[in-house]
Length: 248
Image 1 (cartoon, rainbow, N blue to C red):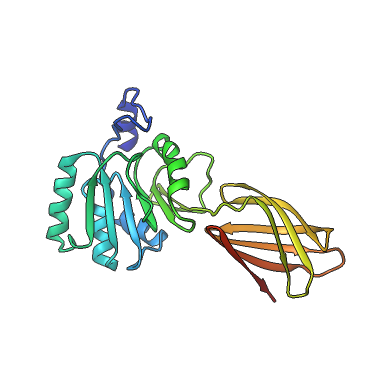
Image 2: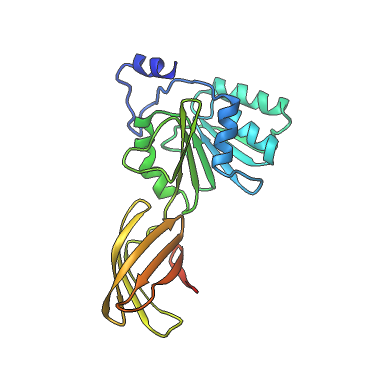
């Protein structure tokens, strides 16, 4: 059904300053529950639903977990319905609905973002999501991908795919620290979203970077100097500050 609606759209624009004619299709309750589960939504989260429609995702999160939420919706009639449904569910004190364009709304407070848009809209939103959301924020999309930004997880559910991304910290560049063995570790990293590659040195001698895994602001590196056992570090990046944890 959604595919038919999409094909009926006639050359709509997804430029940031243009009204987005994304067709409204309610999300089934079992899909909502799966999205919240994949996003590990809990009572400490602030959930933003982009294109929130009648507020089903936010209402379910508030009812089940006491999650605070904000719905971004451009249609005032949908917002009116959503506010009524939230009141009926007695969770209106946890949820706010904002009439705004997806590209202009402030989403920086979110710890989880959900959306059921179109792949083309997701791709247009991608720079905003990466710029405004804090590292570690989970993004859950019903049915539609994010282009070249590959998901961290995905769930197949009754012929529907639900995608999950974790916003990565910016870690590209040079990092240098002293290990517990008093050796100097140095890495030069390249980054494409959460995918990391690079080179390593130990005491100014070339070493092997066996593994580099980034999730949010946690970067795990396995470095092996010649004729030595590999050493695993976790770099925890917080804005301009960072710390290194060495694992046994």
